[in-house]
Image (cartoon, rainbow, N blue to C red; front, side, top):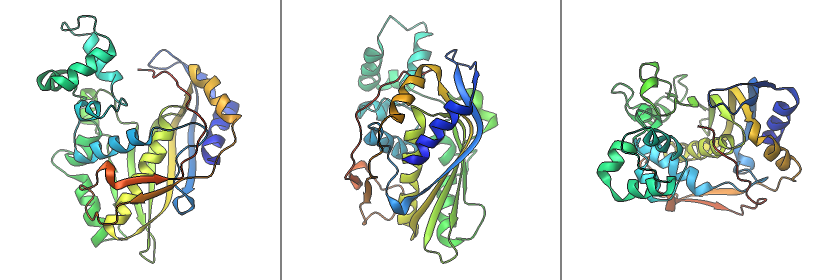
Length: 290
């Protein structure tokens, strides 16, 4: 996927080295945009293997409005594990459990999960209950009934609740756009903070998937995903991993197939989502900075 690799090169070549909240340090640029035509293939990165099931399950979890890691943990999706575990280690209940032992407790004990697996009012809460407003429901209604509105928006950035969240929303603002012939649906994401090695490949595929799902249930075809960044950064301990990817030749994009019988955004399950002909280079593992 050339657009992603171009972003990596841009940061490596023009970014500034900065300290950051995690203490890891980053190389960062401010303000960048890339565009992807979803009709040309599904934008799942090929220069390293991406855990598609994980990002799809996370998206379905967000759509459901859930903000506790237990449903993800039960499916062995680890995307959000680091933040609850870091908080648990600071609590008086911590008895030296490893991350793996902590997650097993989350799976096995519902009360433990309620206390230590909750992330606060993160994406699912903001999408489905922004001070009582179901933004996703209103978005679907608007796309169906008022396609040319300029208010097809979901905002996850809620200043009044930021301090209650395990991690403030990185992908903070989404807007959708219906073509003049009412045939196509496009999406633009504004991402305030972007971990280019670990997070961005997931974010690209997740919002491309959301666009396809919304297009199907609202009567359109997915057209374009526009990804706009605020602080786009490569953590210092990921620079060599990015450089390794840049030596790899991108492969053709895969194809997304959705169950055509699904006509509600809330009814999709992972079994309704399929990717075909996904070929990629091998995984590259990097550490999460919390």
